[in-house]
Length: 329
Ligand code: SAM
Ligand code: SF4
Image (tube, rainbow, N blue to C red):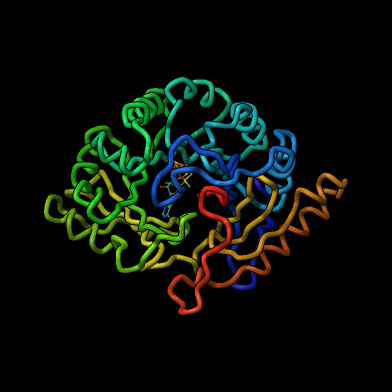
């Protein structure tokens, strides 16, 4: 377990949730995330090794982190994924993963054996043609196979993440919820954020959380569930429960005041926010032999500098230089 000493920022927020991006590469090219041709990938020597990742995770756990989520890019593309999961899980913290599930059908049992407890799987559509348009790859069946395998391997509760794009898949929200209800998965709709590499995000074209609820309510009775605490999703009981659906309205209803997240990129930079415009380099001091205490002080300094909010709604908002796939969503 993490120590009682939590990473506190100047607004009193304690940080207990570490998101580690394992790679900036991906097997899909979701339009809201990555350009068709991919991106200039991080140079191999800059990527943290298995040992370095586990070392930094151990320092974070010593600073009060008690939950680690692996993400990317696509974490399933990391060849050492099982070792990373085992190494971090051995620190006594919960290890979960956000994934597009391509290849999870083969890996789910090994990941569970290594200590993985939960997965969030991205599923934006149940229609093969729409999947091809949105993710630019004909892989819907593979995603569905990955979801079924995660379920069969006992990764529960299994959460599904959906980003709705206007006139592409926004009409599918009731069908996606029906799919989730049928299988006992927890579906969450995420507002599209200005984090795509192509800088194509436009506020007036974003499907808002409110719009999602209006459409779903034509098919389902939704009543607010419990208080959400530090969880970003506002949850609703579906037809009286116990099943729920979540809406993550990061843009129209920011939850920065309750944020408990800190991020580590695949090349060893700590970020105090998805939207931070600065990062703290841990890789260089780590490789130069800095002590755990010195590295811990760098993490704390990064958290101390955390701003109160992401500022997407401020006139002077600047999209971070790195896209979501390189930061770790
Ligand atoms: N490749 C994995 C996946 O897709 O689940 C993990 C990384 S991905 C960057 C993590 C999550 O971020 C996914 O649920 C994805 O839908 C979401 N995401 C990516 N770009 C986004 C954007 N511009 N706005 C909102 N969510 C986004
Ligand atoms: Fe890949 Fe995930 Fe980005 Fe889609 S959202 S391109 S699956 S990193």
